[in-house]
Length: 243
Image (cartoon, rainbow, N blue to C red; front, side, top):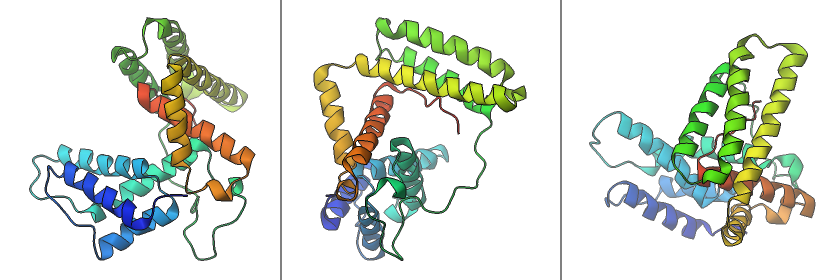
């Protein structure tokens, strides 16, 4: 089970206060209803905080701040991060043992018809983030061979991605998925048993709101997806899979 709405709202209020440099903006009235809705949908606290971070990052880029941020301004970013989290862990209505109540907020929502980045642009970002992951030094020398191999294959793919069509494109997408698996498995092996166990507990906690409506197999798959996301986050690794 997830946290109670009151506790969830209190945690969000505390986090927002820190982001606002100690200026307290109360989560009450309509704001309380908004944040309670996040809790009711099962949005993990960490995911909500990531959405808040995303709003603040964009706010900072606009220049010096002039007034504290209200939680309502962060709603779209929180929902965007939640959608990304559901996709990353493989959580959808089909993974649940019971449907959402009619009229309630669905897990998957309407299909996203917006166009994402092109394959060449995706590969460009992957290479840049992979380079940054190596520079941060968290992976250690033992992981350099994997990064070198992945980077070389990505550079080759990037050189031809714009013109890849049909079966060749599908083969490239499959290769990117395989490379992504290899990268995550390598990162997992770089963790100590204690760190991996801690991340596994965090992954299970993130899914707490959905646990009772998932079969054991579905929960195991979602937990593995959540764990991979946390490992990726720990090391600053890109998502190479392209859909």
